[in-house]
Length: 147
Image (cartoon, rainbow, N blue to C red; front, side, top):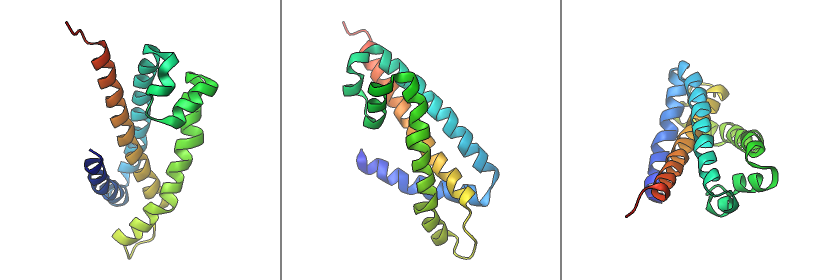
């Protein structure tokens, strides 16, 4: 499973960077996709949280988010996580690794920070979509009728 995820990242990252560089309207699409997937992930995580708030810290896969939830509560953590952790991480990713990849993929063009940032938002959107589907699967497996 890990290898499949790594392989998909190796395909998705250059694809998103290529699209955001060659077709600039996709930049807004990637940011919008991130907002939608983040919201979907937070909604599914909230349902997951409401199943068993006392054990949320043990069951949540994102330990940074579970730590924020323990300290500030779910609603505040839902606002703090993107602001304090995710967006700075996406900015770092756009500043360093994606710009290096951009120079490799497009050697004779200037680096577009906006294209790199949009690609990083698109990559994060895929991660949130995967997390939301795992939350939904967990909810379905624990709430389905088993005679």
